Every structure is written in structure tokens, then in C-alpha cells.
Image 1 (cartoon, rainbow, N blue to C red):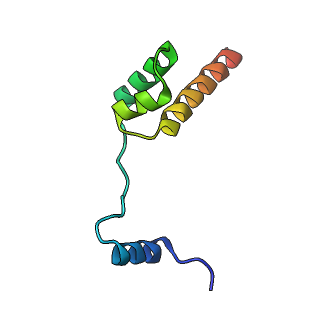
Image 2: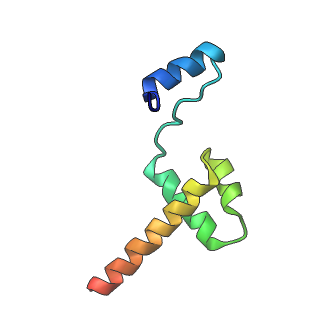
Length: 79
């Protein structure tokens, strides 16, 4: 039988608990992303605190910082 498709699973959830399912939060603007990374890198706040200000999960902020640092390291190696 396998696993249900995303659509079927969503329909089941909506049937069992109407209005409870959370769909996406939407994209975060670039300026807000940069501000979040800058605040976390500057120190004095945790990724949870910055994430609460922006309205995303703490892991999103940490991943953004990690990807920004990785791009920065890559740019230095090719120059």
C-alpha cells in the first residue's frame, strides 16, 4: 500500500482537525535575512531570539549563517 501522497495526507489531517494544519509561512525578504545573520554573528543573542524576531524556526537562522559563511570561505579560495 505504501505511504499516502502529500495531498491525501493533507486531506486526512484537514478532515480530522479542520483548520489546525499549518501551511507555509512564506518567504523572508533578503533584507530581513541579512539583518538576522548580522544580529546573530554580532553576538549577544541566540538563534532562537533572532528567529522569534523574524518569525521563523531557529534552525532557519543557523542554516542561513552557515551558508553565508560557506559562501564567504569559497569566495576567498577562488580569489
